[in-house]
Image 1 (cartoon, rainbow, N blue to C red):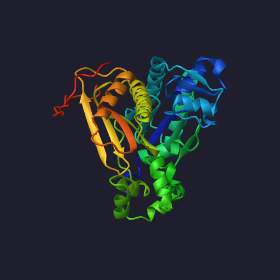
Image 2 (image 1 turned 180 degrees about the horizontal axis):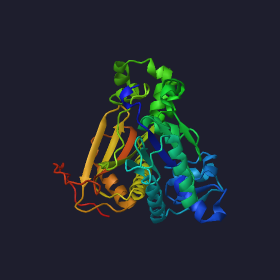
Image 3 (image 1 turned 90 degrees about the horizontal axis):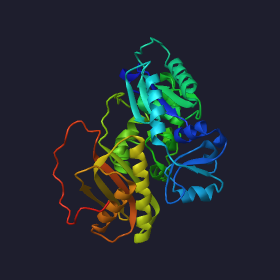
Length: 364
C-alpha cells in the first residue's frame, strides 16, 4: 500500500435504500412492505426497499421484471424534490465536520476527516456521530465505511448495510483485500466479475497474482486500476467541487440482440434510467450519445447535440432511435448505452467540433 496516503482518514456515507426509505418514513403504512420507487407500467425501478430486495428486486430493473419477482410489490412514484430536500439536510451535517465533502449523488458522499472542524481523532467516532445525527434529524438510517482512501471506504460501507459501519485499519488492509471476493471490489461489475471467474480469479489474492501487463491485456486500461486497488493503492483525493462531464447508462446482454423491437425496448429502459439518474442529481445536458458494441466487439458511437437541454425520457428515447437508425452495420448487438454530455454542471463552455448528422432536428 502507498504509505504516503496511510495517514488519510476517509469516510464514505451511503444512505440505506434512500428513496424507498424516504417513502416509508413519510407514509408509515408502507413500512415493512416491499416497495419500489418508479413507474409501475413501462418504467424502471429507481430504488427498492430492503423488503423488496429479498425477492431479487434491484434498482434499474424493468418494473415488469420487478412485478414478476415480487407480485405484491407496491410501486410509488418518485418525489425528487423531497429527496433533494433531505439530501440538503444530510450534507449540512457533513459540513459540521469537514468542508472536504464530495457528493456522488443525493444519497452518498465521501468525506475527508483527516483534519476536521471538531478535532476528533477517531474517524470511526465521526462516522457514528454523523449517522446518529442523520437519524435524529431525518428518521433515516445510513451506513458508513472508514479507511485510508476512497476505494476502501466505498467497499467498507457496503459490508454492514443497512444501518452499520465498517472500518478497515491500515494494518489490516492487505489481508482484507486478499480475502475479498472480486465481485465486491468497487468498479468490478457483473460482466467483469464473470470474466474474472472464468480466469480463476475469485478473490483478491487471485487477482494479486496477475502482473500489471496481464491485467492490462485482459481488461484494458481498467487492468491498471485493478492492479493498484488490490494492493490498497488509490490516490484519488476527495474533491468538493467535482465537475461531472457526462452521465451514462449501459447494458451488456447475455444473449446478443438483433431484433429492432427488442432494441427499442432496451433503449426505452435505458432512457428511463438515464432520465431518473439526471433528475436524481439535478443535471441537464444537450448532447446525447448512443453506444453500440457488436457481437464481434467492434464499437460504434454517434452523438446528437441540441441547442437547448434535453428534458424528458421520451426525448432521449426518440433521439436514441434516430441514432440507432444511423448505425453502419446490421450485426448482433452485445451492448447498448446512452450518455448525456454538455451538462449544466460544466463551469466553462467547451468548444467542440460536432459531427454533422444528416437528418432534421428530432421531435420531442
